[in-house]
Image 1: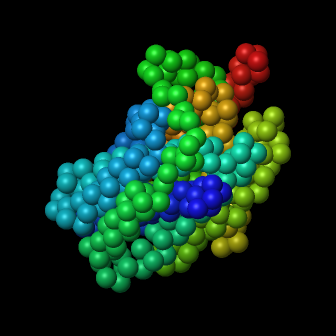
Image 2: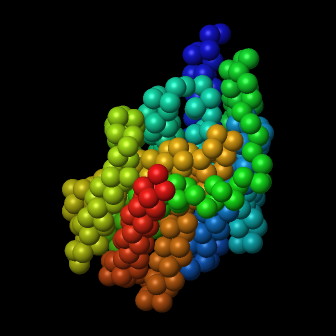
Image 3: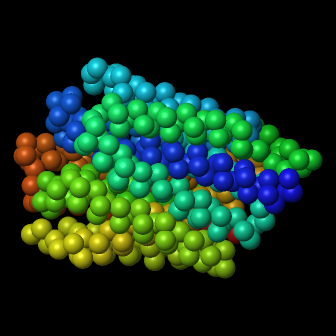
Length: 404
């Protein structure tokens, strides 16, 4: 097999594993209301399920980055896929809340390995000019996993029940584990192995303004769509906007479709405007804030077209935020790119988990049966978080320019 063909196979295998990881990650966003009935949960405890998962995801990013720098993408992806599969099996068998929370820990740990590892894999097989486009294409293709969660998984959950729906994710995870081991190769045959990372140089990566420019870029652009897709979007549409669960799942698919369509275009822009990537991030920040105003300012349920406009505006940030990973890797030495990318990849998830928990607390405080007014008050915390992160983008970009 030629090198380009082998590289395409390796990337396709990595992308499939990432797609499965996104399905594992986002399934609970659709299953939240069912989980509340199954385990007898209030809004705060319900949000804790996703908060725990995202905390583990964020906490694992630096260890995963160091691991992929030392042991390579193949081993890292295989272990991660196996952990996520074990976590979903735990969701099938969990008799109570503590057992289910342990299962979500495993899902978060497995999910944490996927995207950072594939981002690390791409430069080993493809040119620097192709890398930004392929990162975006990979991210867009991986979002098919979110389509799995909001459409077939949601259908299976409400038709056949909890065990069958999560059992299907176990099967998907087992297939992903096999694909990771058999399909992924770390680098072309005969290519020299990259220098192994060492903890000695890691402090310079953590202290680099380029790393934190990536972190805040990912936070400002991605946190909103992560929060909406993983936790509070579905309840907001059902309890706040008055849609049935099937229609709410279909509307959530707008977030996925927007990111899948916009990803390749953002990748081309990032490749052609390499020196102006921070400007692209700031434009996306402004567009996302406008989107939240569209969703939260009106005091009555929104027509579908207005919901779609608001969701498209915040969802584009999900693709632009991946530029943060490119920025962090660009300013890091070769042996520490996985670590820098891992730190940057925590940005959106750290912001999302803070807001997810805050929304749950506010909803419990305001009403045991929240309505639109309660969701509007609680979810204002998201654009506030995005505005703070946007200030972080400006500040770290200034530091990068001064250092250069």
